[in-house]
Length: 318
Ligand SMILES: NC(=O)c1ccc[n+]([C@@H]2O[C@H](COP(=O)([O-])OP(=O)(O)OC[C@H]3O[C@@H](n4cnc5c(N)ncnc54)[C@H](OP(=O)(O)O)[C@@H]3O)[C@@H](O)[C@H]2O)c1
Image 1 (cartoon, rainbow, N blue to C red):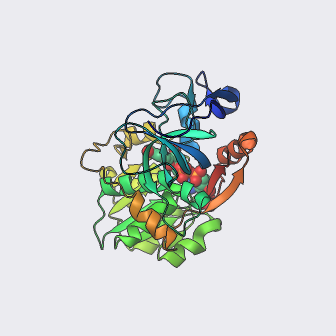
Image 2 (cartoon, rainbow, N blue to C red):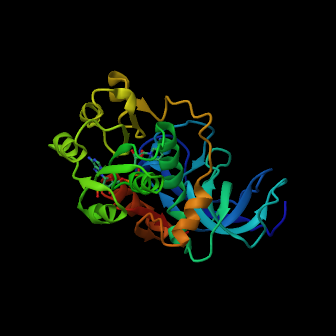
Image 3 (tube, protein in one colour):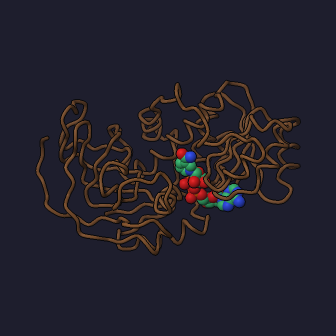
């Protein structure tokens, strides 16, 4: 391992599972050392999202205490054994090792298990908004199949995952129909998507746009309830619908809809982050930033996120 070693840091973490505002604490803890194949960064920005709250509530249970904050940008300050592609002082974006250490990205220093250099021209806040949105959108589109010319509906395109999925599917040559609220509807149209609102009457509006059954559907909405409509839009075939939210899992099982948690991911491990970081630096790809907060104000970010009205990425600046 190389690099200087600060002794302690502030980190947001939990010691028991439960509601985030009940179990999360901002603590002073030892700075972790990067193990083999890991790096440690001084965190510049760290995204917080529904996925982080799901970890607090017990998704992917493991050893405790554990941190939150998966999306990270920062400056490399130490590298573990076997790391040869990055050096101390480099600036990276990627994912915090939230399973392998007792802290994650919502800290002054973080251990990262995946990274790519921040391309010139991409600022560090926008960089930290990318990893989860790109990774999740790209993986789920890959599971569905990204064939040029096919029509895909992205339900919940105002989420960061859905917003990424719309852009990726369009860049891969698909026809994209999207459901979204007003905040980003015009921007989604400018990318090339056909956009309508979610909520009452959604199935009829999408069918009017599509002119027939839609080939593939990715559900990225933060709340459940739309799957029966989505199966109808897919011509009654639940296997053309894939949902990535935790909230839709039991409804998906009843309907036979595919979910993130039941898919075989082998063969779908392509790392799309370097490509989309480069496109973001060139102004050809974007995840909107809704707000940045000092780490002491994490509860404000949580309250906004929990309302399901974040309208972009929420980031801590530790
Ligand atoms: N399986 C995985 O690996 C994985 C990984 C990450 C996230 N996820 C899941 O992906 C989903 C999106 O995550 P995220 O972090 O991108 O969420 P997010 O950005 O925090 O989602 C908030 C947005 O949802 C939209 N929204 C609110 N109510 C909606 C409704 N009823 N229908 C459709 N859209 C609605 C709102 O946008 P507008 O109203 O402006 O449209 C709002 O800005 C979550 O369910 C999350 O758990 C899964």
